[in-house]
Length: 469
Ligand SMILES: NC(=O)C1=CN([C@@H]2O[C@H](COP(=O)(O)OP(=O)(O)OC[C@H]3O[C@@H](n4cnc5c(N)ncnc54)[C@H](OP(=O)(O)O)[C@@H]3O)[C@@H](O)[C@H]2O)C=CC1
Ligand SMILES: O=C(CO)[C@H](O)[C@H](O)COP(=O)(O)O
Figure: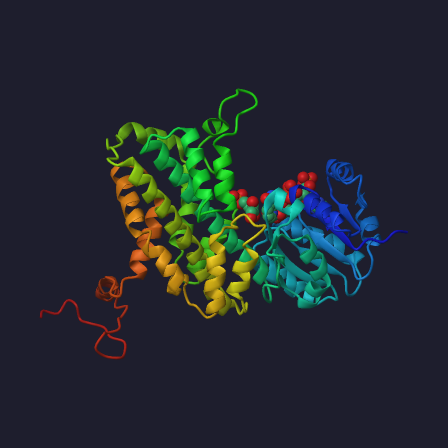
């Protein structure tokens, strides 16, 4: 009986395409899915290739060479546990399971801990790039069991995206490091998408641009320093026509954004680690706010939008480009700062230069800017914050009048800009040596005897605030 090098469980958008990608690279691979339609589709797409679909989990497992390499690309959550439970009795010592879905990193830690008591290897691996990426070269973030990673390295490097001939995959770190880094990747993705949405809103409602002008603007930005996957697809959205009506589809899509949870998890973890990522948080909250449609429609009738005009549209669009570039830098900076903190708190041993390097290709947040970010962490791996890098400081300096003008203009025009405004406020607070937080401490001590520290003396103090003085 023919034996296969790797087996995939879950033949939906990601699993099917990654398997076809592996087959393209000469690996003998097989797939299993609960849904017979998915098996039929795999065999149809892979009929020219050495690809086999299995409807029986036992036969699928038996068809794999030892030690077995089994990748899961099924929906995150309890399904992953049930697939592992189904697989376990069928596996032998040394076999490996690689969970490549968007699993929560705490689930990955638990599964790694449980499986470490057996002879089955397990590791969590984030993957990014969507359907196209999986098919032709994703960015992958494997972490955990290093021995199992070594057995997968050749396949992963072959199928990953390449930048300057270098694969967009590397061992991320122990435990759930791979899934943690993928989660933060998605947090940055949320922030970038929200910024692009705010840019669209400003162009449409402050500058009065039509969809063609908006497409042209995003396209021209993509031809410059903001070249990125998200900028490119955003430009394309504005020229896409609906098949049914012939109208531009963007104008027919409801303004209520959904989410699957990775952005929310990023915000939750940042709070747990006391590490501020306000632009990512705003992106998460704004998707939730968008869903309050009925309330928004009612309030739109209750409060009028201010009347305002842009005096110099030519200069304003230059400012908007600067504002977007500034806020994109801030989004990466916040995500990377969270990774720095998590690496310390969870002992992930993250190498931020390597992470920036594998994000340069294949993934949803790939961008020209990641080359500068990679250079910053390569020059100084112990960088506490991206803003400390001299090259990044120069880039930020050139954008500041733009972001300030865009924020004040949008605010005067009554346009919600949670991501732009939070990026600027975050920056302004971080570059402030003396914040008003001394007052917060005084208030806490006043009403709750929570104590404070002094600038002129070491120690912990409490004042008798009600005493006359
Ligand atoms: N789509 C994307 O752009 C990206 C997705 N991811 C992550 O990858 C994972 C897979 O996503 P995606 O491919 O989009 O999802 P899909 O829903 O397209 O595919 C998942 C497949 O798994 C099958 N499945 C469900 N339960 C089982 C089971 N118990 N045994 C075998 N097969 C099962 C599903 O069958 P059925 O439909 O019958 O339930 C379906 O065919 C998710 O964790 C997702 O978050 C990561 C990066 C990008
Ligand atoms: O992981 C991804 C890309 O990297 C997925 O596309 C992600 O699941 C999208 O998230 P959401 O549905 O919450 O927008």
